[in-house]
Structure formats: C-alpha cells, structure tokens
Image (tube, rainbow, N blue to C red; front, side):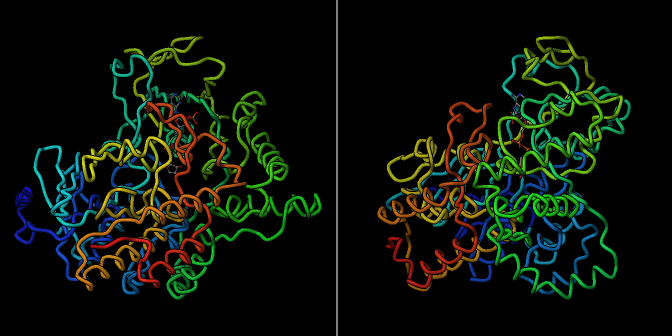
Length: 546
Ligand code: NA7
C-alpha cells in the first residue's frame, strides 16, 4: 500500500498536492528542472530545505562570496528574454547579485508556487511493486510521486572540522555555508579562520581590512591566481547582450564549459621565453584561463606541471614580503591546478598586513577548540569569532545525508561507500525512477552550463517515458559496467586524480572519506554531450523500461 501524499502545508492554493515528480532542491538545478518538467505539463513538487530558492547562493553568504565563472557565461541560457532583461553588474558576480538574479528568475517564471520551503528531505523509499517514491521530511511529513529527481548540488553537504572541543567555543562560530542572513559584525574583532580553500581565500581577502586581528589556520596551502574582476561598463553590457549566442557556443566547445579553451601547445615543446610570456599573460587576465586554458600538458605531465608550479610559486614570493610566510603559502604536496584553483583578489598581499597572521598547522597542529579560542601545540589563541571555512563532503555527501532506499531496502549510501556506479551520472545502479542532476559521473565545470545540459537530457528521458506510457526506468547492468569503464578510462593520466580534495572524494572530517574516488566524468563536456546524445538518439536502449 502506497502512502497517500499529504497536502503540502503552504498558503499558496496552487501548491502541488499529488505530484508526478518530486524534485529535491531549489538551487540552479532544481529551478531549471522544474521549469522544463512543467513545460511537459507535469505536476512538479520541489522540496527545499532553505527558506527560499538559490541553493549554493542561498546558503553561502560569507563575506566575499562570488563565483569564478564570467557572469555572462554563468546565467541560464534557456530564455533569450531573460538574457536581455538581466544586467550583470560585474564580470564575476558577487553572491548577493547572483541570488538576486535567481530570485528574478523564480519570479519571472513563477516557480515558487511549485515549491515547498523549510522542507529538508531525510529519507526516500521506493515501493517496488507500485513504482512510487515516498520521501520523508525532517518534520515527518511525507510526499509520494512516481519519479524522484535529485537536484542536491555537488557542494551542499558542509562539514565542520572534527577537532576536540569544537562545540565549547563561547563566542559565535560560523561555517561559511551557514553564514547568518543578516551578516556578522567583524569590525575590530579578533577572528580565527580554519581553512584555506576557495571559500576561505575569498573570506580572508575580504575581511582582513575590517577585523581587529585575523589568524588563519592553514593545513594545506592552495595555488591561487588573480581573478581580475571589475564592473561591467554600459558598452560592455550592450556588447554582451548582443553576443550571447557566441558566448554559449564557445562554452559548448570547451571541455569545461568555460569560455577558456585549453591551449593546443605543450609547455614542454615551446621555448622557456614563450612559456613564461604565456603564463604572464594568463596571470594578468581574468578568470580561469590560467587553469583550464593553459598549455595542454600542464594538468597531465608532471614535468610541465612542475614548471607551472614554479611559475606560480615565484608569483607568491613576489607578492608576500616575508619570505618565510611566502614559503608557507606555497603548496608542497600537490602541483598547480590539481585541486580546484581558487581565484583571488589581493589574497597574498593580506599576509603583508600587521593584523594578519598565518599559522601553519603542519608545524603547530590544532590540539583543541577551547571556550576562548584555538589551542595549537605551540600556544593558545584567543578569539571573539571563529570561522570554519572547512568545506564540503563533495558530490556524494548530499546523497549520504538522505536515507535513500531502493527495491528490497537497498541503501544508496552502502552502494556508494566506494566509487559510485551510475549510468551517465543520471541514474544510480539499482535505484529505479530516481534521476540525478549533477550526481557523480556527469561532466562538471562552469556549473550552470552542465546543469542545463543534464536537465534537458533528463527531461528528454522523462518525455520519452510519457510518450510511450512507460512507468519505470532503470539502467541496464551491462550499460552501467560500460559507463564505469569509460569513466575510469577518462580520468587516466589526469594529475588531479591522485591528489586529496573534495573532487577526489576526500574529506578528513567525514568517517570513511579518506580513499580516492572518481566522482566526475573527466572526458570533457563535449564528449559527455556526444555520448548522452547518442543514447537519446538511439531510444535510450541502455535503460530498461516497464
Ligand atoms: P575546500 O576547498 O574543501 O577547503 C576546505 C579547507 O578547510 C581546506 O583548506 C582544508 O584543509 C581545511 N580544513 C578542513 N577541515 C580541517 C580541519 N579539521 N583542520 C584544519 N583545516 C581543515 O572547501 P571550500 O569551501 O574552500 O571550497 C569548496 C568549493 O566551493 C570550491 O572548490 C569551489 O568550487 C566552491 P585541507 O586542504 O583538507 O588540508
């Protein structure tokens, strides 16, 4: 017997009570998935833990939060009208503007009336006989639908540091992904921050000028390159709006969906002068060019990578006055670009300020968080405020936090203790009628571009089912095995695959997440599009339908 879905507790009379599809998450993925499914005439219920839309841009309100994609390559591309209506204020948009953009989209397309907020999903069960998913919220409420689409985001499961005494700190302590909506007054305060990833770098460079004193606790330094952000002028705005077709076409042609295409030359095959000149040029240009538009061998050949790392280390030494501090800021355990490259604005110069101190946790590890601050092996640091910029349990973390059970009680979390098994990253093996947007093994880069492609593809699959009266979809085991082989092959030779980071599934704050895993499809977005396009054109033979 299938649990009858409860009526969503919302004032809006149009709230969907008996959905065809439940979408979990109202971020960029969930919003667009809703839009597309609604076009098919389906009743869609979106369940969202937050109090409003926005996902990443709803949660991550820390000072300095912004994306590293060119704004005009980041927004949704599906509506020409929207593209013409929206003015991005900066080349790399700050979080408040991005959230304002998403709110504009939600209003324009009247998306919220299908959404239920404050609705954190904690469990999802599949009734094998009836082919119905029932999801349960934290509140105990339940909703049921034949199809479940997870739009959880790869970086939504934030993690706190597993340090003794963590909860004993007497003052306010914030994870960057749970930054208070009203902001935090840091003026004149003694602040300690743990972490030096992309988030911490944005936070540190933004707050250093306001705080009384800032102490940065660094376990692993990261390579970082200048963002070179600036305001978009009126002429640029006009030009951008006239060029959207070309911009998105360019994104379609690169393997990461950024506007930056890998250079066809090899670092090892050009002269030292040519190499240096190219790197100087990339270092002076905005965005991810230096990472994904670099010589083609920089992320695959250790010798080329060493040269690039040496160039970046030289830049850090030039920018940081104290040579010892500079040395601590230079990564030693991974090469340039083998972790997600943070882009920065005067980050390294912050360490020239008198009110900023860098504590290298490799020299003096943290022993405990205390009521007054942080105690390392060397000393006790006292703070008014603590900031945890300690990252996320990437890609699989958001799935692990929901008790997802397929036929016979099969638990997704058990299946995914190691590298997940999926078909095209859109379905997990053994979980019928559950489709994923940006789950493991899809191409990732300039995220909204990847999202639009996956959502369009998933929508095509759902449309196919509706047109053929099909009630159930699951991957064929042999197709899963083929895809697993392909995913494994695609990552071969990529230097990042051997380096600890959220991208390789490592998070030392989460039990069991200390083994390298393949969590993306690294054959590039062009190849991913080709393969998924062929599967659709072939009538989805890799899937079994009932
Ligand atoms: P990241 O890149 O995972 O960074 C987390 C940082 O926190 C990193 O420097 C970690 O050091 C540090 N960390 C985590 N736990 C601890 C403990 N227990 N002690 C000391 N230091 C710790 O997350 P971000 O939020 O910066 O960025 C995530 C993505 O968001 C980013 O890639 C962008 O795509 C947007 P570690 O490196 O593990 O030694």
